Amino acid sequence: MLKRTFPSSEALQRFPFGLADIAVILGTLVLLALIARVGAGTFVSFVPPDVVPGVSLDPRNLPYYAGRSTLRMFIALFCSILFTLIYGYIAAKNRRAEKVLVPLLDILQSVPVLGFLSITVTGFIALFPGSLLGLEAASIFAIFTSQAWNMTFSFYQSLRTVPQELDEAARLYRLSGWQRFTKLEVPSAMMGLLWNAMMSFGGGWFFVAASEAISVLNQKYTLPGLGSYVAAAIAAQNLPALGWALLTIAVVILLVDQLFWRPLIAWADKFRLETSASAEVPESWVFDLLKTARLPYLLGQLLTPVSEAINHLLSSLTPQRLPHPREQNQQAWSDRLYNFTLLIVIGALLLTGLHFILTTVGLSEVFKTFWLGLLTLGRVLVLLVIATLIWTPVGVAIGFNPKLARLLQPVVQFLASFPANFIFPFATLFFIRSHISINWGSILLMSLGAQWYILFNSIAGAMSIPTDLREMATDVGLRGWLVWRKLIIPGIFSAWVTGGITASGGAWNASIISEIVSWGQTTLTANGLGAYIAHATQVGDWPRITLGIGMMSLYVVGLNRLFWRQLYTLAETKYHL
Image (tube, rainbow, N blue to C red; front, side, top):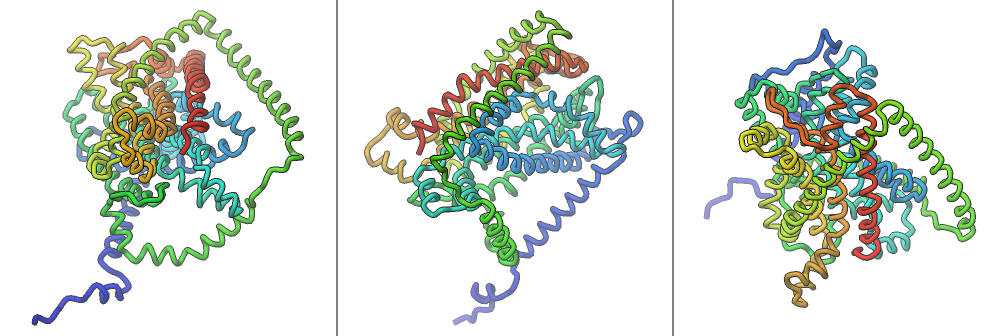
């Protein structure tokens, strides 16, 4: 009998650290070194027009540019998560705040990224005089505006549709506001929030070029990054440089998927609301590595007293508050006063904006933008119908089948994260040589950035349907359209509405860069509101910028109020698990 020379697993567990811990430590050190190396470039001097950063088309600079862009994306994502948790919670929990915050969110979603840049870029530069940090802040804020609204809509809707039995249990156990938030509301919203965060992160890449190669108010600013590299390659008509940029962004997306999103998906599987275990769980080698390592566990144990003290403090500050019948009459009077004040403020703002527009551009320009808005609205509606018919069944199939999800999730994440405007130059060449009108071609370009909201929300909705309900549907023999009508549509309806409203807003926003595309000196311009705003922003025409953004906000908010909000109400009252 051979004597065992290698230590047993029990013996290995007695060592304070293992190979997994060494890997975690080395990985953390490498990550911190990369952040320090890339982040140092944000503190250089910036004194336009004398001292400004430039972009070289040498492919050897692409790893550094990719690091700069990725760092901006993650800072914007962190800010978006904080904004989502705070804004979404207040909107869902406070009736009076909801009357302001939800319509305001509709308006913010409808304002294009170029609109935010036009307003904020000068202020951010003035906030950090002589430093590139101001332009970096403006770029990060622009990316933030392309990420936050989708996540906030998802979280708000999840808070409004918390399962009734869990809500009753929280009331029964008299959970404080903080305990309810951390033990019930965030976990129940986690699946949808995670998939929408993935979608928002991917959507952020779509606007990286606009946020790094900034051209507003007759001024041009450039930040080192993948987006500005692509913009420079397009201007130079350099196809090899574009090819290297596409390869680089593909590598970055795959790395972010493996090192960040897949571990989060594997971790978030524990938040699925069901009584029977799923057949298979998502897997991630990074998540397995972190679970194997002892260092994260020891660090968690070390921080446990601090987290418990914070939880105790916040729980004591947010005790459960039960409504009293006496307060109803007082609330009725205060609600009337609040609504009246709100109407006065809204009316004053509308009159001020209308007076500014009419005294600068005239009534005929208002009718012109209204007609251009109708043209863009038609493109948005065509996009939504086609995307729903194609991607909803695909999303349900992925959400119901863990094997398929494990196979296709990286592909879907890659396609959704890949910035569609990076391939706009190739599409422009195709339209030019095929003699395809950009009025039709812009629908395809808009869909490349907006359709994924419906797919990702369909996946999240399908994954949130409890396994026991799916098993019961199979046991009773539901098949074909019947299983869609009785199980799938009610189960994913709330998520699909969130996907539809964010896809609609994303399509309006994407129209800014989809209705006017260029290759070198050749520019194709569609008839639409997006092209109108893009042109006004480029030349710094403030009255037309205000009119275009106001008209787009009117269309988006009107569509949300008249159509999407009715579907939200239907999801809360009828299709509610």
